[in-house]
Image (cartoon, rainbow, N blue to C red; front, side):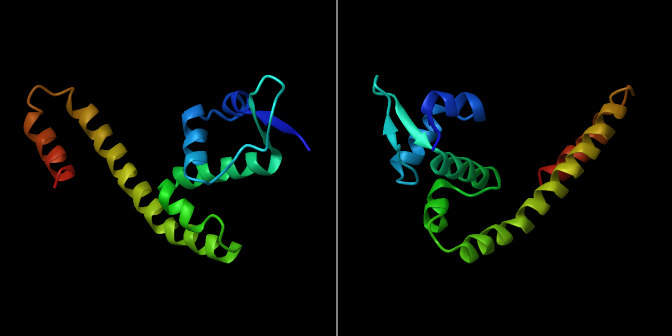
Length: 127
C-alpha cells in the first residue's frame, strides 16, 4: 500500500500541515507509520479520509460536526451532506446577487453623482 509523508500530502493536495495536525488532534485521522528519519506517513485510506474531511469543511461543516458523523454508516453521512445542500444553494444565490450588485456599482462609478445609488445598493446588502 502506498504511503505519503505529511509534507508530500500537503504539497500534493494543497493542504496545510496545521490542518492535518488539527485533524489528528481531534482524533479524525492518525499517521500509519514513520520514515527512517521520523517523518509521519499516511496510507492511502487515511489520505482519502483527509481529503474527505477537507471537502466537508469546504461545504460548511466544522471539525466538531465532522467528528460527530465521519465514523457513522454511509447513510448517515449521505443525509448530513444532503442537509447541507440547501445552505450551499443559498450561498450561491447570495453570491450571485453580490456579483450582480458589484457589476451595477462598477457601472455607476462611471457617473459623477453615483453616491446615492451606490448607497442604496450597499444598504440593501447590509440589512
